Image (cartoon, rainbow, N blue to C red):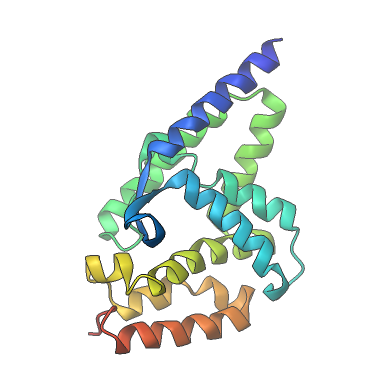
Length: 197
């Protein structure tokens, strides 16, 4: 019963992710801000749909689990805008490591180790599974912003080169999607949704 109690505590803790808001705007819901739980669900399904574009063989079950857990740390650390200042993004990494220890520490030992390892694998993005998961985490906001006249890019005056750099995981993990992304970035720039130097 102790393990079950720990698992229930973890499940209840996850509910808090629904209260962490991102900079992404949901066009279909009066442009309200998306929460991190919605984002995790959406990119997990996106990964399944776009898995045929992976350049290497990926274990989509592992990719999906990475995507479902990757932002749980935001319960403690909060969300940062992807294009925020380097100092803010740098400080976020330390907060997220501490959050991972606390939140994943709620789980029984066997599950704690598996989830923590998978979270670190995603963060380091060195395996094909993690690189594809990172690529999905990058492409979905691009798709959302393109459908919303630049969305958070336009709202926050994001530069073209920033979006290119952010999406570079696609170049090796899903080259066909990388070509799609570059085309979309050019369109966004032409329409004034992304700034140039």
